[in-house]
Image 1 (spheres, rainbow, N blue to C red):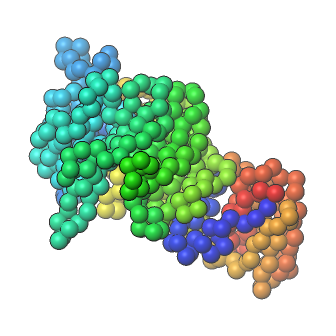
Image 2: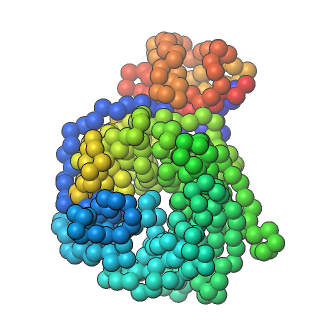
Image 3: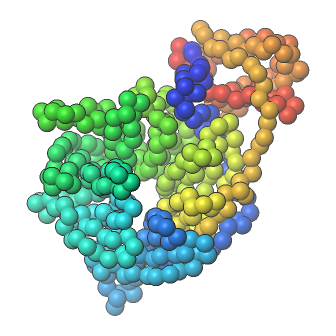
Length: 459
């Protein structure tokens, strides 16, 4: 048994965020009063993007027969691109998407001036400012049976001007076969690398590793109920004979979303209602998983991390946003939303939330929640200066000061307190040999002071 390296100095050295929040974050689900602003938008809002003083909301309308074709005489609602004023929330303009409904999940790419949107076997390009279609087939795959599922654009700043360099995109030929990932060089107008990824790939992110190299993460849902979701880590190499260094993380039941901050990836699982953490420095999936607390079809949808406040936001079909602290393990809040929450965006001091469906049902909703983030209640505690070491199944807690009758809680990954006892003096030894292997949270509280950390039980 050993203490996680995140809490032995590497976290500070690499500016990585603490992971202890995951234990308490999902265990508390009491909702605060809904004090957010409700703003009308298009039908079935999916995602939000900001540009200047405009908030762009992408709404999928209501395709009642799921054929992808808008039929007004069937009481359907078309997909729309709705622009809102960033300061008032009021609608500025609504564009009907003449090309048809969006792909679900909605995974386009944005530069400062363009949106790259997958449409069947093609990638369309829209001007962000005018919402006008400027290219129907910027990239096209010859096989019409192939579906492009997600797009990601790589830009660089050259002489103060943003330059679009590469388009990364995932695609599949069926719902049961493995998909593919490609990198398209915009200047050369050709695919420069391609590799196989998981089944039903649907979200792409990029990041710079600690050596400054550009890498990609590709999340694949897997098959329905197959528990074969994966996250592929792809490092392009100069030779086309071996175009990628690949790491595959096996995740389980239906990966839906992920975010990256400071060499830490948090992956949200819709099917198993949990979060996985991946240390991108050591290239390791951390042991254990962390329950979100939702059940059934009310699962988690999207996850975003605010690197400025170290807060994590998770939208759910349980009609709430769960807010946790990445610093100290505190559950800050759970905000009720108007309907089933989908896409989110941090805009100024607010969290904008799409309500895709009505609460408790699957009739399409047509509103946004704008949640002031200063509403989130935090717990300010002074840190207890204690050294926590685990070795050979023994938890050792030492401090230069007397604990003054402090209380120890050991918490499992489900948020349950499994050991609770009083401490005294400045040295304590506790046997953990009876605990199953896994990840545990440690909380030591003495009056207003508190110490929290994470341990991993491995031997």
